[in-house]
Image (cartoon, rainbow, N blue to C red; front, side, top):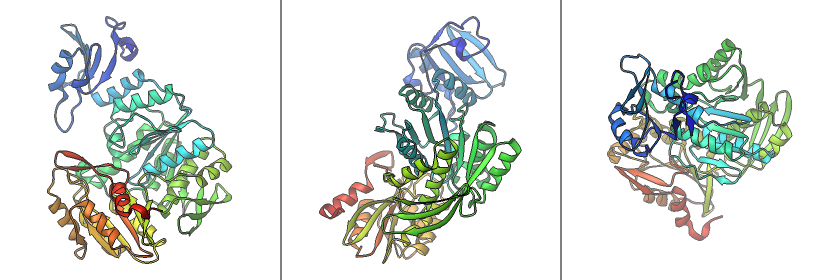
Length: 486
C-alpha cells in the first residue's frame, strides 16, 4: 500500500489517503483500489468505472477528453484526469510496486527474444548471480518457473510491475526481459530503467496490429530512441540491416553501442562447425579469440548465445564464466528442441511462427539432417494474413515434405488459413487436425530424416474459436513414439 501523496503531486487534500492496490480490470477492484480506465480494442475503459467504484475503488485514473489535467472529488471518489493514461499508469505503477536490481536488461526483435533471455539467465545463474528471465516462457528463476504466470510476451503494465516487485523482494539481482513491439507501443515498459537494451533482428510479423512495416519498426525503435537512458548500453546484431539505425540512435544520444555477428568488430563469429547435437563455435570476443561447444542446435542459437554473452560481459560477468555457462546450457523449452528419435529420425519442436524464423529453423536443420526435412506448420488466426503465403513459399523451398495444419485458428475458418498457406506451397500435404498432422510426419519419417513441428513450441494449448483446448506438440510426439524416446 502507498499514500496517495507518494504517487501523485498536487493532492494535498488527499495526500495521506491510502491506496491499497492498482488495477485496470474493474472485476478485480476492491476497497481502496486505484482503478485505471484503459481503452482496449477501441473500447473505452470509462464504461467500467461505475463497476470499479461499486466494488470499492476510491481512486480513478482516466484520460481527459479535453486534455486538461485535473483532480476532482465526486461523492468521496478521487478522480484523476490525465492527457495520456497509459503513460501515467506506467509512472504510478512503478512507484507503487518499486523494485531494485543490479542489472535489468531488455531484449527486443522479431525472433530470438525468448532464447536470448533464457540463455542470459542461465549464464548469470551459472556465474553465481541470482537471476530471472521474464517473457513468453514465463517467469523463470534459479528455482525454475515461478508461480507468476502470464500469457503474453510482455505482461500488462500492472502485472509486470508486480512481477518485478516480487522478484526484487525475493532477492533476485539481475533480470532479463523480453520486450515486444506491442509492449513498447502500449507503454507497458515505460519508466523501467534498463541497463542494457538489445536488438536481435527485424522481419515481418504483427502487421495485423501495426498495419505497416514502418509502424512496426517505429514501435521497436522507441525502446532505443525514448525509453533507454543515457547510462544504458545497446547490443545489436550487426548482420541485421536495422542495426545501423540503432547505432545511429546511439551515436546521436551519446550511448555506447556494441554488436555481435559475422560482420561485427566487437563479438565476431569466425566459424561454426555443426555436429550431431552440438555446435563448435569460434569467435573473436572484443579482440580475444574464444571457442566453445554450444549444446543447442541451429545457427540462430549461435547468434542468440553471443547476444546473451555480450550482454552478460557488458553487465559485468567475466568471459571465462560466460563460456562455462554457455557450455552448460540446458535446452530451451520449445526452441529447436529435440524431443525424440524414431526409426533413427530426429523429431524437433520449435516456436517458429514467422517467415524468417521458419526459414532459419529449416536451414539450420539442413546441417543436421542426413536425409529429408519434414515440416509441419500452420499460421495463427486473427493475425498477420500477409505472412501465410510467404511461409508456404519458405516451406516449399527449404523442406522436402511440407504438411500444412492448424496452429491457433482462433475465430477464423481454419480451412481459409490453410488455403492461403497452400498458395505458396501447392504440393504440401493438408491435414487440418494438428495431432494427425504430427503423427503423420512421424510415421513417414525414416533413418536420417528430421521432422520439424513448428509454430507452437512450448505452448500447451490450442485456441479454436472461443475455446482454449489442452494441446502440446511435445506430448503428441512422445505419445506417438512411446518406447522409442532417446
